[in-house]
Each structure stands twice: as structure tokens, then as C-alpha cells.
Length: 161
Image 1 (tube, rainbow, N blue to C red):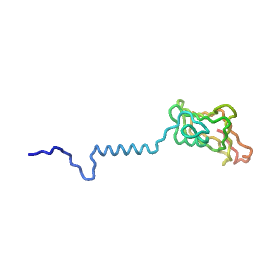
Image 2 (image 1 turned 180 degrees about the vertical axis):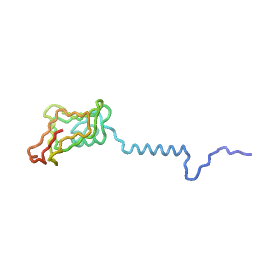
Image 3 (image 1 turned 60 degrees about the vertical axis):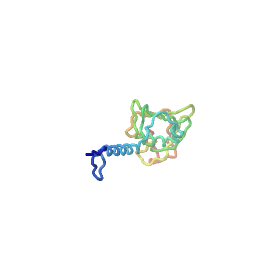
Image 4 (image 1 turned 30 degrees about the vertical axis):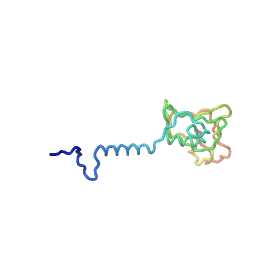
């Protein structure tokens, strides 16, 4: 009597062996979990700047901060002395911690970076830079200006920060 040298457990048609199924599910879960993964912001970023080390505008930096959050050690945005930008209702929803703060500060010598208000859209809710659910956020050496052209109750900024 001959015995077969290789023995395999019978497999039902349409079913995967449990080890193979576990591998397929594991790889699938890994791929799905990495689809939206982005690195949190940390270190020093320049405004204006480009690439991994900076942002063209303060508005672009705030949008990325909100989308990615704050990484280990926190993030510092250095706004160049003399930098100017017109903005309204920039809303920061990301939050820092004592160990991972968010800092917006003047870099270099010269005039403070100036953020000028665009026309507002409300008589009570407009802010140049708003904070919603944010902690451990510092602004240092920035000048906020509401121009005289914003002369009505609707176009004026009600809040700086």
C-alpha cells in the first residue's frame, strides 16, 4: 500500500485556507489604513516658503495644519519680517499640547509681518484668525490691521484673534 507523500487538507470550493485568508485580510487592512496617512506637522516652517520647509501663504499653512495636525515637538511657523498678506476668517482647528505647541512668530529683523483684513461677511463673527477648539497656540510679533476701507458693520473685522 502506497501512502501519498504530500497531504493537503481538503479545501472547499470558493473558500481560502485560514492562513492565506488572514494574510490577505492583513495586507488589505494595511493598505486601507495607509490611504489617508499624512505626516503631522513638526519642526520649523517658513512663510513665505515652499516644499517641506515652508508655505507660500499663512492661509496655506493654516489649511495644512488643520488637515495634518501637530507632530512631536510641535510646529513653529516663522513669518518673514516685512511679510504681508490679506486674509479673513482663517480658522485654526488643530490643537497643540504643552509638549507639542503651535507657534506663529516673526523671523528676522525689520518690520513685523502684517496680516491685513479682507472684507468681512458678518456683523458679529468675523476674525482675521480664529481659534476653534485649539490650545497651546502662540502668536508673537505679528501685526493685524483692519483697513479703513472696511467701513461698514459687515465689512469690518470684529476680532483679530
